[in-house]
Length: 490
Image (cartoon, rainbow, N blue to C red; front, side, top):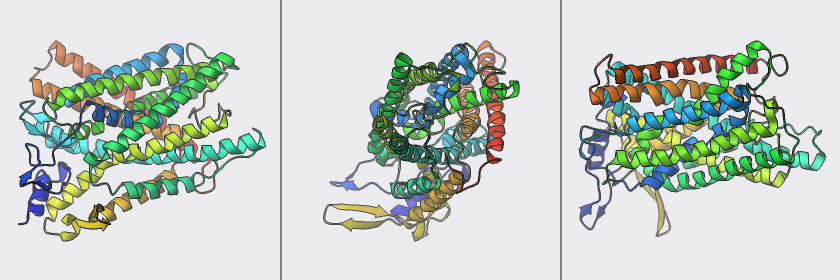
């Protein structure tokens, strides 16, 4: 068996449920192989690169819906909910970071993926359940980011149209064309072999996310100071004025899903941690990165949600930068939407790389002698430039991007999709599995005070996720009644 095949077999040793990435053997350096303790390519990540990955993943399209979410909940419940979700995410992320290695935090067996960590502590049915939740959420996020990027790209066209022809002009555009262009760009970036090679894209995307979030905050602050501002209340949208009683309930639950989505990154936490070098122990680095990432994003979220609500009140748009609460300065709105598109190019890859790694690791383990799957072809572009081409990677990743783009075209409903993704991912991936693994890892006895507290937290988060999921499905159903693919303008 060749060295390539042996590495592929080792990377897929956990079978279908492991989903480990396939890493080609690292190049020899002066006769020595630069590898980590597990024989894989040496990890070089730091607190700052991990923080960049987290910020790239967290400050995404979700931030744009927070003014709308706050409008559904009001001045009291809205900010409190943002802080509660931040606290829960930070706490459970720390529990999950401790599960990267089984046993000793410095020398224990590495768990390369979220599913590997679950497999080390919990039963096989729970591993399969984790896989369903994780990969459905990752695929859904890819679809959601395609929708959001296209909306932002279309908003550039609309902003210029409104500036030229006036706010009463018909500036509606079809989003489908922009989704196709975004998909073509993702086909190119999807050929990056693995997560370790994406640090530069994550840093660029993190800068973009800071930029457009800052622009949204600045425009909201300017609107709040200069006016006119919308009517804001302690309880949010008013029954009988803005919505009826049934809509108030559905929209409030959907807002919870949007906030949950805004904090979602637990499904790729282990994969991010697998890029971090040691010493120090990876869990220590990851906890520091989580503190930086969650605290930074929460500050932006509070500013975007609260200032956006202060500016537009109960009439806040679902997407603060593309719903045209702001019309001027049009060039700044254009720039903000360009930043959103660039950020989502990177964020799409951060969320899709675990999917790519899982499929390719499984294929390499199942068909270790298939050259189509395991062989890397070196393509040179001059003496110094070149890249590795794998035919299976090229074929399947291209197919994935095409399918996710088509699904985005069929369901381009921003707030409903975000709420649903947040709902189905928050409880199982952010709360349930980290709590269950922590209980098993620490051997916490049943019905003790700590066990009851952890299970109560998990149950309450389950109720929130269930309510948000039902509300989002209801929203999608209503939106589908008036939508015709390729024909309905936004």
